[in-house]
Amino acid sequence: MTALSIDAERLIGRIRELGEIGRDGDGRLTRLAGSDADKAGRDRFVAWLRQAGLAVAIDRVGNIFGIWASTDNADKKPILIGSHIDTVIDAGIFDGCYGVLSGLAVIEALQAAGFIPARPIAVAAFTNEEGVRYAPDMLGSLVHAGGLSTEAALAISGTDGTQLGAELARIGYAGAQEPGFLKPHAYVELHIEQGPVLEREGLRIGAVENLQGISWQRVTIDGEANHAGTTPMSMRRDAGHAAARVITFLRDEARGSNSPTVATVGCMRFEPDAINVIPSRAGFTVDLRDPDEQRLTAAEAALSGYLDELAAAEQVTITVERLARFAPVAFDRTIVELIEDAARTHGLAARRMTSGAGHDAQMIARVAPSAMIFVPSIGGISHSPRERTNDADLIAGATVLLDVVARLAAA
Ligand code: HGY
Ligand code: MN
Ligand code: MN
Ligand code: MN
Image (cartoon, rainbow, N blue to C red; front, side):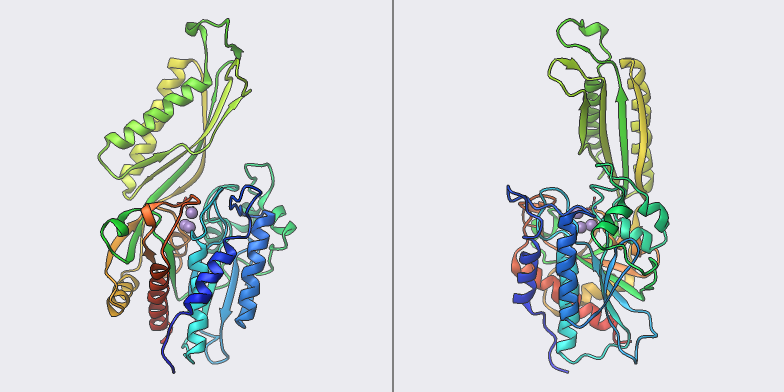
């Protein structure tokens, strides 16, 4: 067997090439699950899988698998490397795509070196990890792990009124395989950190040992439309003002709690959305996260209590729809130690850490020993066109992934 190494130029080139698929007229990158842009990205990834001689399998919720198996090892459970290639709106080019394309690069490096794995190795691109169009997020991996039925997932309607199943069929990615058909022996996900920790501490690799809990809710406040000019302030049932009070409440609660709790209102819509009409309705989303289950539950309860008070004080009606709720996850210690040892072997300063972002690994951890590898995000920025990771760190992360997968696949 010759020395193992990642083809750096090809990996960086593919990340940039995939990063150009799905740009709009203003140059903004958006590949929402089930969209034409998502199809174009998927098609490119599948073409690369086929070029590498991998067997391509697609399941009923559109999860894509590239599988390297031989007659000698096909009966064994595979090592699975995964992430996602769908994006948020006006996205960067690394979130998810880096891990998927690095997984392919790892398989190609092992093939090129004449490595004979004791078990199959597969790379997966999971459907709708971002959850921007269809909630919940991490949807494809959640179905793969048995956390949501295929039928329920396909029936989910999106923010644009479309149905996930119909869109996957329309773009040609409603596959034949039953989700969960591939039972991983172990799962490793390489991802940009999407936060400031590694860069701030001058480190190259994160050995991710756990991932915080996530709570997504959609809140609808119904007040009363009225004339902006003639309605005295004391007589208003202003849904817009009530919504603004919720945003301030959440920010003050999260900041004041001197805990890692984070709270975000990312989407907000007023109706009838007219300059001279007091909003009759305000619809918005709440994203709460905390590494500790008790604190996350307490944050949800504090919001619920506040909404009850607010409804009475502002004489509005408030309804809440739960969109996603995932408890914190601890990853597999053995794989975390493998990641740390691989980083040391390559002279890369590393630390254990918690993931602030949600990832497919938190779903696959339900069915197989799983862990994640992080590389630094410049300025800690992600979910933004300013998302950046330098080439040397991208290759360092893929090299650690290669080392870890080679060790996991040796027996
Ligand atoms: O929301 C998340 O953390 C993930 O990017 N879907
Ligand atoms: Mn991601
Ligand atoms: Mn993301
Ligand atoms: Mn993720």
